[in-house]
Image (cartoon, rainbow, N blue to C red; front, side):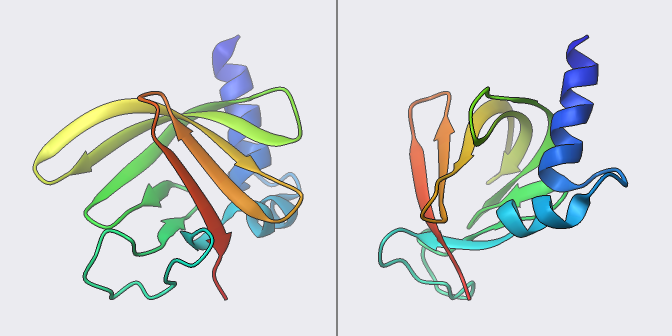
Length: 122
C-alpha cells in the first residue's frame, strides 16, 4: 500500500509518469536560493549556493540526495520524501518534508530538525 502512495506522490510531485507532469515540474523543479537574500549563483564557493531539484534528486553544495519514495503530507503542496544521500565520502538515508507556500517559497524540513527556506531563482 505504501508503495502505491509513493508512486502517486512521485508522479504528482515530479512528473515521473505521464499524468500531467508539467504543472508539478513548474511547482518544485529548478534552482532555489536561500531565502530571503541568498545567491542564485551555482559557482559561488560556499554552502549558500542554491539547491537544484530535478525529477530524480535534490542537489546541494557538496552532496546530493536521490528521491526514492514519497507520500503526500496531507495539506496543500506538501510531501514527505524518502531520500538516499551521499556527499563528502558518506552515504545516508533521510526524510524531508517539502512544502511550497502561497508566496512561492520552498521549505525543506529534515527529520534531524534542519530547515531550508528557498526562493525561486530566475
